[in-house]
Image (cartoon, rainbow, N blue to C red; front, side, top):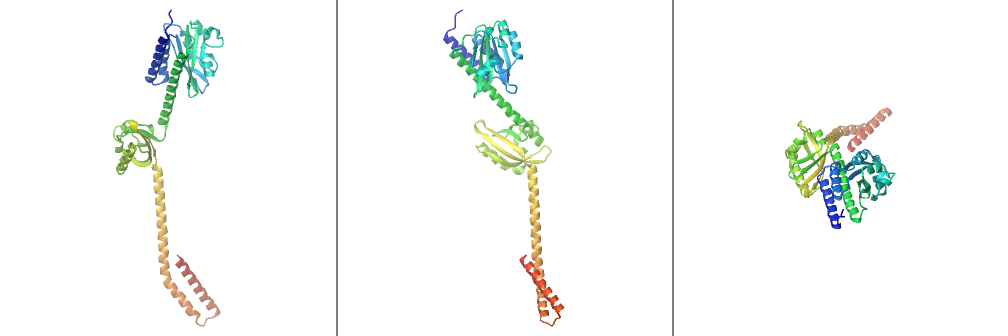
Amino acid sequence: MAQPLPEDNAVRRLHAEYATVRALAESGSLSEAAPRVLQAVCETLGWSFGVLWRVDAAASVLRCIHAWHDPSGPGRDLAVRTREAALKQGEGFAGRAWSSSEPLWIPDVGRETDSLSSAVAERDGLHTALAVPILLHGRILGVLEFFSAAIPQPDIGLLEMLDTIASQIGQFAEHKRTEEELATLFETSRDMMCIANFDGYLLRVNPAWEETLGYTAEELTSRPYVEFVHPDDREATVAEKESVSGGQVALLFENRYRRKDGEYRWLSWNAIPVTKEGRIYATARDVTEQKLAALELREAKDAADSANRAKSDFLANMSHEIRTPMNAVIGMAELLQDTPLSRDQREYVDTLSSAAESLLDRKSVV
């Protein structure tokens, strides 16, 4: 059989890369993309069997995401064995590639007695193997593994192609992991999270909205969100929306939203615009209880201030009312002191005069 020309190899490898990119772009998860990626690579390069392994960090093993083989060709028993396997570092061809972080080419699997799949692969008529680690930012996320009756020794072009495919798979897996984490955060957050457009509509809300306001997501996204805002706060809300749509970040903006039962709740907003998408990403926290507590505290302070003012006014009035008769008492005491008095009488008058002057001095201070 004639060997393919180098330019034929280059075309097939480009086709495999394109098929991988397309499969990833059209898939919602790595499990969904894996069969198409493995089939594209195997059929394009003439290989019989392909496996996509992922690192299970919690268990420190490789687990099979998918094992592909031509239904009319070899690999049926190997597929069954592979799907059930969990490989530790250094175990099997994929485990050895994981451990070394380098591609591994096995020219004769029958001589590899330490591999769990060697005997099964050889029994299926698969004699050579190639394992390529999937790396992202220096971290191994998984391994691509292929078997064939005769995989040629990898050249630079083949390794570069597989490295590109592995990198694309790694980026896709990391992107999906990040999406899942963000979705979990979005769905479980106690704060109200939303995505809105510049036209004033909510596009997506998390469950905290329904818990706080009582409306379903469909009700909240079906009409302009300003319709849920307290009439007295609508003008300020529209002005803030225009500011954010123009590129400004909103920090701790407050307004009142109507609950489905008619009650209003105070919300405190933080919002960031993404102008090129025409989207606003925002979070809101229900601060109604804090608002009520602050109002009660302010009312209590006002009441205390009012009581203090009343007390001061009372004392001031009392000081004025007492001063006139007290001056008369002091004057009469002074007149008595100039008259003949017994010793006891003089002590009484002195005591009266001293007490009156002391009382008058205290009132004048008030």
